Length: 142
Image (cartoon, rainbow, N blue to C red; front, side, top):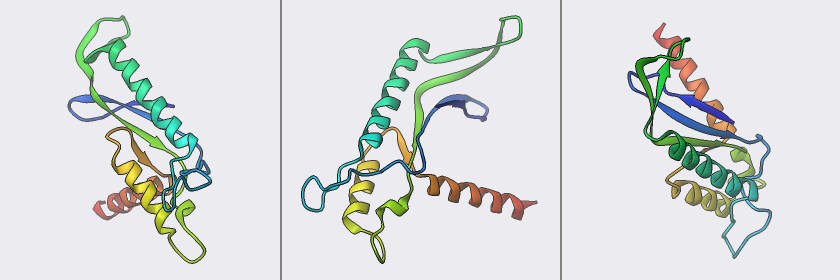
């Protein structure tokens, strides 16, 4: 859904797949007692993003040279060495029960996403919290 590049002195490509904020994080039923598998959309989004990154690395190789309006290289490049990737979907509220956290669901989700090397999985509420934190920090510095 999004192909971005970092804004540092050396730029790198970053791939992002954005699903819906109501996309299910986990399957609707346990696989085994206490074991909640990832939803089809979560597992499919991971695979889709991994394939997209792999195809891009094969096609572009290590760097993508920047070019001016006439097509000449500018001397700057965007690098594509093990590019970062992010899958944004769902909300952590899906992992809550009647009065609090549904421990087995939360643990199943966290173990799944923390054991993936790539992409990084972020929920919409986590993304919003990060954005709010950055805005608060920027306001304190100004």
